Image (cartoon, rainbow, N blue to C red; front, side):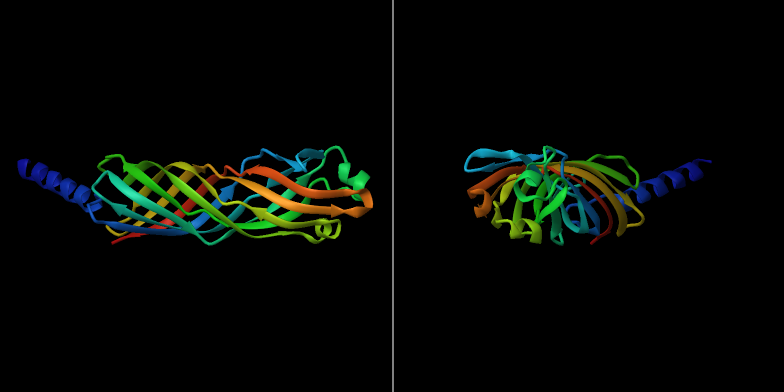
Length: 235
């Protein structure tokens, strides 16, 4: 009986050791990542004044997500989040029908523009000791989002909108997640994170028919929830 108990104890120790993260381990993950901006809208200003109550919002997008984790010990690690570029539709909200009055077209809910961005994020992770294959963790980090390929769609372009630009954003990120280790190398990961992304958008407007011209701007608070399901391989 004593031998049986000793054998079970040794097997349990070996199993835990096999799944434990070690200093110097490198974990590479890949899978689906969805960026879901918050539902808040950004007021559109022209020459500093509100443009007839119009506002902007940003839709969701899902792309291939990649991240790289380096372990300092069993609990502490650093993670770099990367992805293929995310492309979002910028939606014009016009509940009062201002665009109908100005342009003879109701643009409420119309796709105003398209923007592409990359949101690289570096986070410090803390893994909780569970003694099992399930490794939950929390993380906090910094994000730098770069916007590019900003362009208006054909309808706003035709009525005088041009030169759309979004400034890069620098902010914080927080997350919770878990790895479930299938063996010593392979694992499945799920995570949810919030990223502070806020950008100042600017554009030119030249609608001579209604004497509307000048420099427009809007502060777009993207502030997305980011959801990921990934497969990982640890070296």
